[in-house]
Amino acid sequence: MAQAQSSTDRDIREMKFRDPQKAKALTRTLERLCQEIGREVSVMHVCGSHEQAIARFGLRSILPRSLNVIMGPGCPVCVTDEPEVDEAVVLAQEGVIIATYGDMIRVPGSSKSLANAQTEGADVRVVYSAVEAVNLARQTDRQVVFFASGFETTAVATAAVILADPPENFSVLSAHKYIPPAMEIVAEMPGSKVEGFLAAGNAAIITGWKIFERFVERHRLPVVIGGFEPLDILAALAKLLELIRDRDLRVVNAYPRCCTAEGNRPAQELLWKVFQTVGGQWRGIAHIPNSNIRLRDEYGWIDARKRFDIDLSQLWQGASPSLAHQCICGDIMAGIASPDDCQLFGKECTPENPIGACMVSNEGTCKIWFEYGGAHPAVSFASVTTSSGRS
Amino acid sequence: MCLGVVGQVVEVDGMVALVDFFGVEKKVRLDIVDEPVESGDYILNHVGFAIRRIPEEEVQGTLDFYEDLIRYNDLMAQDVKADIR
Ligand code: SF4
Image (cartoon, rainbow over all chains, first blue to last red):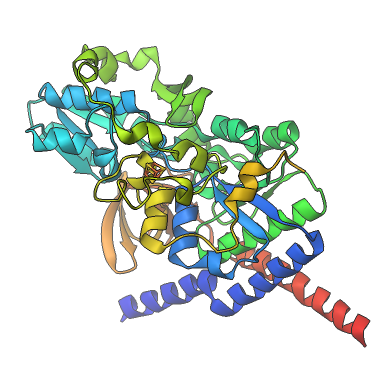
């Protein structure tokens, strides 16, 4: 009985964030704001979960035609660089157990993915959580390396297991990435027409929304923090359009039930106790200062890069030239091209046989386009590419 | 991977909570949640860790935020109607 009651509660709760009537009303608000602005507007979100929700709930089909919602570099798997994958592949080939999140297994490295290594006999396990990777290490004498990807929110979980006394045969190969510096880079991409950012609610839960204030100041672009329910996204977009219309340069938190100004302090402490940021390459985008989350020297004892001598030359020698150089993931994530613009899309490159990383992850734009169909017909990425600058 | 999922805490045992995610029960670590949680609380789960206890009053805050935006639209609509009249 109590069970039935609570599930009704939940249904109601969920409906509140998905109510079709409210969605319609918010869409009308968006229409009106677009009319008031009176020209095409491009905004960018930087979160794979936003893209997934937009695709899953068909939100693009109800957005005003003059509103372009571009997906930025919001998929951590997609931006994992080839050499990072190579490191994991080499370790797997040398006989350690690699534990990693599901999507990572199929990301192509310079000559193979972890899935390829697995087919050749390497021991690669998919885990849902860093905790599972630690448990795996507890059940074996073999070395277990957790190939850790994800943005700051996911890195906090990695930090937590590192601080919770993991067994000696456990180590971490960090491919974690820090999103704020990447936003800085894409905001300044030549040709970008992006007039505002929809920031990822999950990352902001940890960091707090205040950290975007400097971004707004520096780039003179408004930022709205949004959640992941359909109404969250529509409301956040409406708020962003309001800010653009009024040239009101500030950060607005449209996800107040989860995100606060200061964020989750204990989580931040944990994160920066264990990790620091260093510069690094984001696949297809750029070398971005302070954007890779790496273990501090004090935690060298659990850093797979220090524990093992990882020699990548064995992979690079004799690697055949791949089609990967034709991949335009970087331009797609930077918002200056769409999957349609890639000659490999849906032909050589499919979810079964991905060439670029955007086709691998469920959060990747190419995969989402492949599975749910393309964007809103009016989303004219071409106009973004040819634009001479931000208005 | 970066999907956050909301669930309701069924019971707490030290650093681990049993959480009900719309009918599926899963264990979630509490190492990094911002506030202590107890059974009945709603939490946001991220890769097996609770990252936020969702306060009831803030749920209302979000709904009010939607309403403000919608009301704005309706008020404008009335303005326009008034103009036409
Ligand atoms: S379709 Fe494939 S190759 Fe082309 S941009 Fe997307 S991921 Fe890269």
